[in-house]
Length: 112
Image 1 (cartoon, one colour):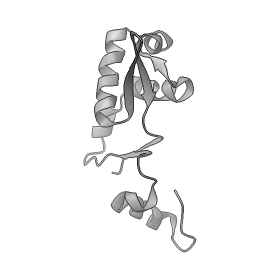
Image 2 (cartoon, rainbow, N blue to C red):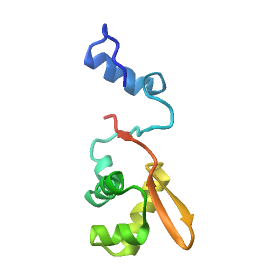
Image 3 (cartoon, rainbow, N blue to C red):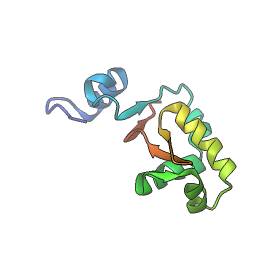
Image 4 (cartoon, rainbow, N blue to C red):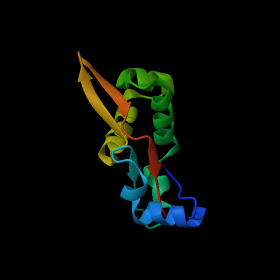
C-alpha cells in the first residue's frame, strides 16, 4: 500500500476500508467486510490460519501433503480448504491425479 505523505496513518486506513481499489493493487488482496468483531474468528479459525501460513511457505502443495504437514485428517483439511476457496483466499487446481492448493491472495484485510 502506498501512503500519501500528507495522509496520516488513520486517514490511509480509512481510505483502505472505504476505497480499497484506490489503495491496493487489484487481485492481490481480499477485503472482508465483517460487522461483528467475533465473526472473523469463526471464519479464520486457528486451523485455517495455519493452512494459509503453511501454503505461504510451501506454496503450492497437494491436499494430501498439506494434511500430512499439518498432522490433520485429509477430510478436515479439505473442508477448511473449501471454505477458504469460497472466500477467495486459496485456489485449487487439478494436476495429474492430485489436487494442488495455492494461496490466491497476498493479504486478507478484515475491517471492524
